[in-house]
Image 1 (cartoon, rainbow, N blue to C red):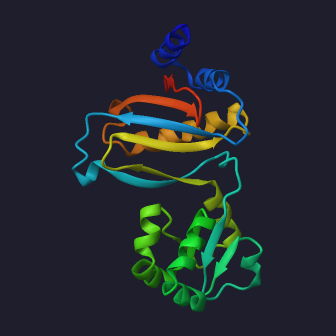
Image 2 (cartoon, helix red, strand yellow):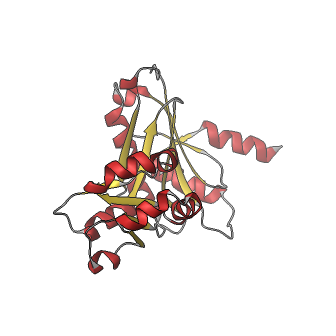
Image 3 (tube, helix red, strand yellow):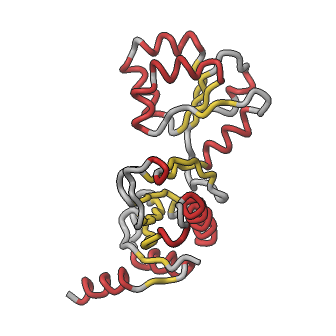
Length: 224
């Protein structure tokens, strides 16, 4: 019982971001697998049936994800240089064959975390692969013609999708337990800023903020 009461007090009390990270670390047991830091932002005062109150945005975490993210590129023209940077390159011919091979396509989706694509292939990808990629949040981001593939791959490895849709709760992965507390703090601050910038009334629409490790206890945060 005392442990349950302590956990309840931890949930009730609000900490500064740095304090909350330290508290969450202290309350979490060491695991045999990498844990993810999750930032949860609960919003209020919004009618989410109205499209203008919902959003989906890409956030480039300033300190990265803390783990290796696999990136695939759908490409019609990129040469050997691109293959040095992406984990997988899918040519137009391979893409067209994959459209008919759902098993191979699903394997590709499972194997890669992020997708990029040359603009010329986007209509074909959207029409043929959209039903599989979109629900998983893996629709490719277009590759600008004059931007080096390496720069886009590096951005993709650091990015996370931030969404507010039907539920007034936003979950954002902001790193792993292998990262320094200061890095998690920077990522959490960037995520909070993106959300409040997108909300109609900014911080007024934020009901509460919680940070936790995957298997850890939630800790309330008093964000500035």
